[in-house]
Length: 320
Image (cartoon, rainbow, N blue to C red; front, side):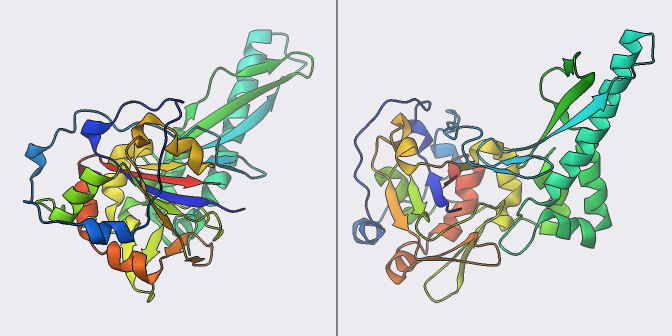
């Protein structure tokens, strides 16, 4: 399965909500950023208006992985699993039989959800199951979140089959979700960079987004992808900023299966910066390797990322 990795950074004061209106766009390469960069005075958080919330452009279920135990919905920022309970035909108290079957269904759904969560890719080398094996506290926290997972809709009763089905859901990126459970194993996030650099401000004035297109490279989605330069040096590790990702939830990391679908949204009316991924790396193929030209142009991204994420101006979109 091939994915497109999109890193979207928005100027909040220019955004409206995501719709379906088609707008013209002209993808540009990262060379343009290097050529057009000009000197500007660094600004602080107080000088910018971040009152407009980041739009939720991804469509839940658009990029999802189905496993024998449940579904990992990367677009919807959630993991879901169902469980089934059987009504006792010998119980004369129908209401009691239904309640007991529903409780049994919840227990099965919790077991399936825990199994599904273990298969989530944290980064290009590790799945959640590795963290749960290596850290007892992680296992306990994930297990606790699964037990408290929210139920999706009411229980579904099939009187003919004599069964009850329950669906449970937990978030991937959320302080109360999977990222919150993994926080202690990921280390301390990097400090906020302030004031905003001239390059970061200049980029936001020129572009609606920066798009890393990995569709031809076979990029896979993960919670915390890394970006490497052309020489194999680590340019950006998003796990260092897990605190900011978690605070922004689904608007911080979004997954889509069609670049044109996202770029047709009103939020992208200003031309985005499209960067083609040269190749992917890592055991699961979820890390990005850039070409030399792109590497030279995006050297500012690591320094600007903490500020952008904290300000609610950083979105990740991964597309099929």
